[in-house]
Length: 331
Ligand code: SAM
Ligand code: DTB
Ligand code: SF4
Image (cartoon, rainbow, N blue to C red):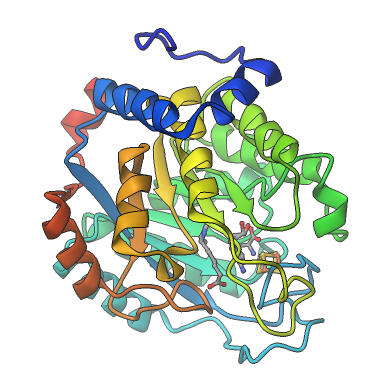
């Protein structure tokens, strides 16, 4: 069992591999112990995700239903009006979400009118007292700075997979491009949300490498989403096998042990999991989910907020309230 009192940034692949491959019950027990040491294990952060610009993306991420080059059923939707986005954020807040995440199917942010509108959305959501998160593709240092000044709390930019598997999944950008944006976000003083996907056809070694990159960052991402591939018809990965939930449990537990203070988010894939499978993910250290009124993630279905609140009630869990400024300063 790891020393539970320190946060390490010098993990070796062998150590993480030994953790990932532990007998399952021992792994869950260890992750649950670390989880309880650093977090209130009764609380789950609810984050509402809204696609503010959908489809038509020039990138070729082979898992994504929003890439223009694949023939999927996704309809292109230009950037939503600010009022509509703010109305959705208010609804999310009223239903117990403490974080609101706006996603755009862009390769990168451009310094144009659409970015100005995103800045207004960030200001508006921040003024509602929600943690504001965006995921808009690649960012320069000055764009990150502008988002920070508007009140952006977190930026989601996933590694998606390991460095060595990257080219098999995406050819229109590199793993280093991802790291550059994450560094720009960090330098601007915005918290980092970065994780990845399993079920892409990667090896266990790839999964461990991806966690190793995150866990050896100078500062761990404050949030690490673990996604199971949502198989979208028309994408190159549409016929991949469904991810086994025990694999999700192993990923979550390994992330929890390697990055004890981080919020580990059980992300895409919940609709295909039973209540019991999700409960094991929470036991293994997941303490955050995407939920919402709309019952979708971006373009794929997700459980709705009513179902999720009922699940939390069954498990004796409660939505995590947003931290006050004072609490943030002491943590
Ligand atoms: N375009 C931006 C980008 O790629 O960073 C932001 C939106 S993108 C949809 C955010 C993340 O969602 C991706 O990096 C990927 O990890 C995850 N994602 C996208 N499609 C997915 C799918 N079909 N299944 C699971 N995760 C997916
Ligand atoms: C993340 O890691 N998962 C979310 C969020 N970041 C933006 C997106 C998951 C997308 C799942 C497939 C879809 O609906 O497009
Ligand atoms: Fe575009 Fe993001 Fe989808 Fe890749 S994951 S195709 S960058 S929307």
